Image (cartoon, rainbow, N blue to C red; front, side, top):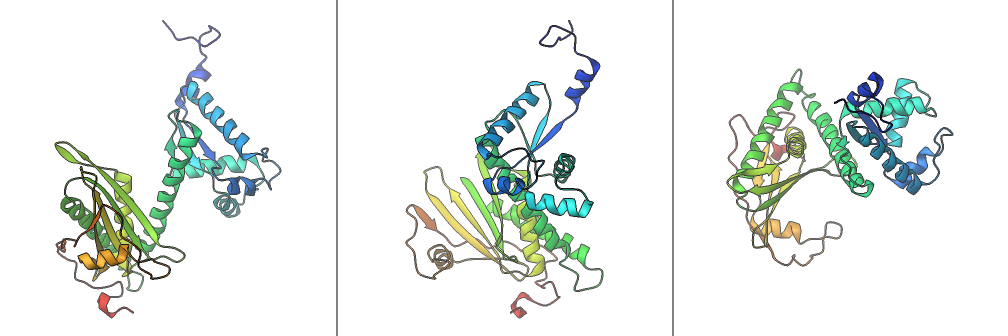
Length: 311
């Protein structure tokens, strides 16, 4: 028996095809971003809360039609740059539609699965930030070999392979428990940070998100390839609820383990004032294990010199 619509009629071919066409919706999650779009006369909303209610209603309507929906974060600055590059009028609905399609093609979207808008937005912001981190780190990595003729691609590939190897070793030496890995390297305005969570699975390898692993490896590779003074922190929550913290610093194109005193000092010192701060209750600061350097990691920096030669 053929499915019929709400009015009891058979769905038309156009309605059937509409179910086959996915949809991407771009959302202004932040009030400041929303306010920035109000300068365009064709942007018909004047209240952010009401706008989000209407956006949630739209998502539910599309989902009720059986349409696959992905959601992207609408960035007014990125939109303005996109319109300038594509020579589009930013004060036109068609331009906003094209920008939304551009966001969908670039990645960084999340699927809509009926979740409330207040649960969707934090996930969307986190995904967009992760995408931006990956793009920035990829740019650093691709430019890491410009100092020597034709060396960029080879050096970037080698650094990424080394970073991926390091991540495997970090996960292998992490031990039992739930792990929280953070890789941080200096960037122009603020540190470039990648986060990786793992959860234990009985009788199986830990659950690792592939996208988080890719971003983590790319940020670490960018630091290794450019000789930046970054680091990695591994925080493990054990089944009894206690936390263990270990760390490594980027040194000689690899990761040098921090001693117990070094990781304690790093965690128990105010980054802005340099004053000591009390350690966290229930946290154990441990010396990190040495990670075996892979073959081919010769300890040379991006310019061919050792990391110890850098200022």
